[in-house]
Amino acid sequence: MAGLVVVGLDGSASAALAADYAVDDAVRRGAALKIVHVRDPWSGDLALRGLDNLTAAATRHGEDILAAARERVRERVPDLDVVTRMVTGSIVEQLKSESAEADCLVVGSRGMGGFAGLLLGSVGLGVAGHVPGPIVVVRQMAPVSYGEIVVGYDGSDHSEAALEYAFGEARRRGAGLKVIYTWQELIFSPYAIGYSQLLQGVFNDRVADVHQRLTSWRERNPDVKVEESFLTGHPIPALTEASRLADLVVVGSRGMGAFGSAVLGSVSHGVLHGASCPVAVVRPYQEER
Image (cartoon, rainbow, N blue to C red; front, top):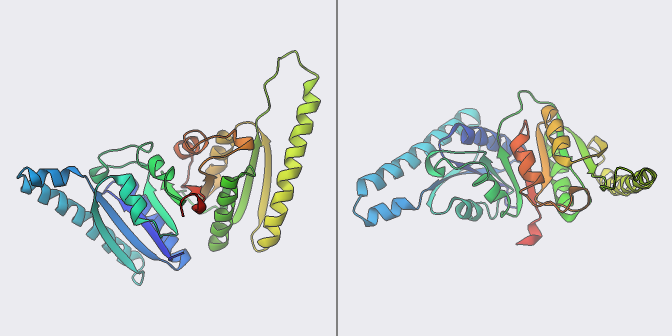
């Protein structure tokens, strides 16, 4: 890894929260910080049409955003290594390119200005679904530090990547790690009472398998305090509820097993919209690198 945290800024309040999170993340990692502003592609079109004054205004707006962000970083952490970049084009593609060698990409949940008022489902989810590695979407910050990281785990490759990232975050923060496994019962006829013991047996087997998998993670990370939570039901309400007393929730970009082969638009999407703290969506690097 390059020792780099990238944050996308657009001048919105949500992006300001993302910038503060990115600064703290860079400090924890001992990494450099890259602040990126993506200018709308229509700025170039305006120049071609002779509307240079509007192009210049868009450029100044981006420069002002980056200058203000850099000054804010300097006030908080004077010795942090900071670079700024203004690029033009598709927000998702540009952020993907700018963060290609980064340890983490941080964005706000919604934006204005360069992000053209796009909502979470357009920018945050678009980037989270296409960028390998972790992307942190800052919808809101936890009101206090709870000293706990929450991660959804189901044994899939994506949740393994999420778990690895969650352990790293817990270690860097000196926090505990809460691992949540949920299992959705199969739906039978309401008259099939005899299936209850069968379902309980399946759940017990799943729990035993996940516990065994987590044992090896505990052994490799003895410095992290781990709490295991095994629940029946859908993962979204379980993770959303746990986020109320967490500093960060970590999920895979998609899952299998207990997550019902969910793609980003279901479990991760639901957690991103409902969580009370920042959410990290982790896509395995090997999918593209």
